[in-house]
Each structure stands twice: as structure tokens, then as C-alpha cells.
Length: 467
Figure 1 (cartoon, rainbow, N blue to C red):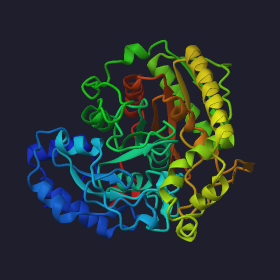
Figure 2 (cartoon, rainbow, N blue to C red; figure 1 turned 180 degrees about the horizontal axis):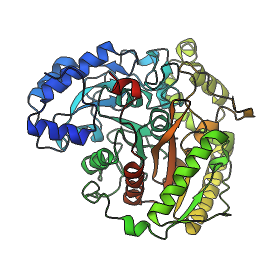
Figure 3 (cartoon, rainbow, N blue to C red; figure 1 turned 180 degrees about the vertical axis):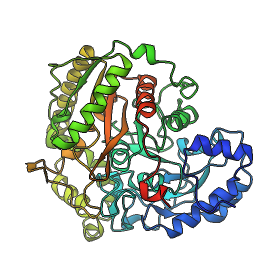
Figure 4 (cartoon, rainbow, N blue to C red; figure 1 turned 120 degrees about the vertical axis):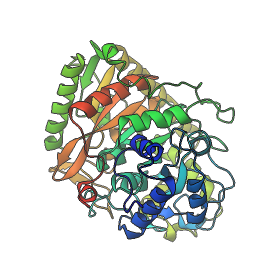
């Protein structure tokens, strides 16, 4: 009987099932024992009897056969809570299961261990809500794992599950990956369908996972990607990402790279950038890529108009409850609603379209001059678990939006981007972000694999590894 959950990656756990070293039921029980003993507050819901039945019947020949996985609170599973991490919807229950999660079960063979915590409506990069409280970073529980996929980051880095789902509308996979020492891929927009019954919104959100290894993420996308008619922006199916890992290194040779600390107008901790730039230079040298300096990587500011449009979906969800619900919302969502209520109109819409058009033009120009942009995943190490969102570090006033400036450009243009573990500062992980052209995920995976092999990262937080 396994006493603790598997501390390797998901692929190695499947191998352990197939060799008889472990069983899915034993692993699931170890997962629940660890959740019960954990102070990370990473899980909001655990359907234990249902999950144990699935574990006992798991088909371990499937890619994730028998692997307990976490499901981000904003991903739908029929019969599970559908709260949007908001007290207002505390008693809502999902009526359908998302395509991604359904594929993980039916085609991947995964066992749904439970629901990982998220920021309210996925709106901020801090996982602390009125409904669930603060989720903690397993590297140092005084700090946040980020958001909005913070529970996923805490659960995977905290040794509770080997992999869990995430979503990225402005950095919500890459930000927690960077803060918790995990690997996170934000794929090209539409790579995994967001069906069924998903509003189109700002067309920035992609879904995927946070994992301990490059191969785990490649396998997740092999299982989950592919067109669904209920999401007209979903892309045709592609395959072979895991099998082809390491086969694209020759394609990386000679590719042009811009290494920039101020992507999107962000302000980055100087001490952190020294570490990240060294990792970037090592990658460029090992891959035979070319660093191109002097490229104009400036981007237009989307401004307040974009923030206004980003609150529209939340406005509509809370319309029947506003303003009576104000006092049970997190400060960030309440403030956002108060600031933007009634401000979306013809003029704001026109500004949004103009600015997005300008950003698309600039991103296209940048990626005509370089093949990759390398920057940071976050401007600094993880901030406090209870917040507030950081406004100052290293003596530099950065503003609360600073954290997302590094990640948001790839969401607006739809580019794929990865956050790769790249060391630590003051005992907390930092992530290197690599942004590529549309549809270049396999190149990004191979570049990440090169870092993984030359500078292996801890698969879980040190406190977990020590037991």
C-alpha cells in the first residue's frame, strides 16, 4: 500500500501501474490522505466514492490510465460544484462536463480526484477567495501559488497529484507555473476546445495543464487537443507531441531569439533577471540559436477599454445579484465591477478593436524579425498568500497590473508560450517564459526539454521531497 502520493511525473506513475509497483486505487487513497493532511488549501471538492470506483476500474493501458488528476474549479464536471469560486454561486451544480476533462477520462483514462481552487471568476493572479480562503504555495506557505490556476499549481508542486488542469486567459497557467516551479504551456488559441456552452468573450483563453515534466504536458495535449463543432475557433487535431519530443532540435538551430526583460512594458526584479538571462543564454548556446539584440519589441497599451471588456462576462453572470452581492465578492472583483459598470459602449468597443488590431500588427512584425521572445513568466518571486497584489518591489513602483504584462501579449495575439522552471531566488521558484509563433508548440516543447535535461528542476517543492 502506497503511503504517500507519487512524487515523479504522470508518465512514470503510469509505468508504475503497468509494472505492478502501484495500483490506481492505492494511489488515489494516498492522494486523499495527503489532501487531508495538507495545509495548502489546494482542493475545494473531492468526490471520493465516485473517484475510488473509477480508480478500481481504471484501464492502465490508456495514456493517463488510473492517474488521479486535479480539475481546476472553473472547468466543468457534471454533478460537481459550478461556483466560479464565488460565494454567490456556492450552491450551483454543473450540468455538463467540458470537452477537455471528458477526453482526459474517456481517452486518457484519468481518475478525477477533485476540484482545485481558483481565483474568483479567474479574474486575478492570486488564489484567495471569500468562498475558500487563501491557497498556499508549497515552497513557502506565506506566499501565493499565483492564479487563477493557483490550486492546480499548489496541488501539483505540493505532491498531492502529479498533474491538474488549468486555463490561461492572461497568464493563469504560466504565472502559477512560474511561482511554483512547474512546467506550463499556454497553447495556440483554440488548440483544445472550450466546449460545450462556453462564451467566446475576449478570445484570449486557452486551456491545458500544469505539470512536473515536459513529457507530461505533451501527453496531455496529445489526449485533449482537436476540433469540436461547439467551439468554432477550435483547431484541427494534431498528434505525436510526446513521441516526437527531442526530434526538433535541428529545427531550433539558427532560429532568432529576442531576450527582453521588459516585455509588455513590465518591470522585472533585477536580481531575478540575472538568473533568467543566464538560463536563456545557455539555451541559445545549446540549441545553436541566434540572439538578436536591438529588436523593437514595444507593444501598444490596451488601456482601460480592454479592462472594461474583460469584466463583461462577470457583469452578465452577476447581473441578477448586483449590487446586493458586493460585500461577498473579493476586493479585486468588486473593485473591477464598480470601476467598469456601465462603461462598455460603442466608444469603448471601437477602442478595443483599434488597439487589438494595432497589437496584432506589432506582434506580427516582431515575429517576422525573430522566431522566439524569451522573457520572464513573472516580474518577481511569489507575493503574499493573502495579497494584496504587488505594487512595489526592488524599490520600483510597478503597479498591480505588472504581473500580467509579461504574459498577456501572448493571450491577445493567440501565441503559444511556455513557463519553464529556471531556478530560485530566496528559496522561491522563478520561471523563464518562451513565446513562439502560432502553431510552434513542438518547437517550444523541445526547447523546454533541452532546459529540463541540462538543468533539471525539482518535480515537487523541497519540503514535499524531504517528506
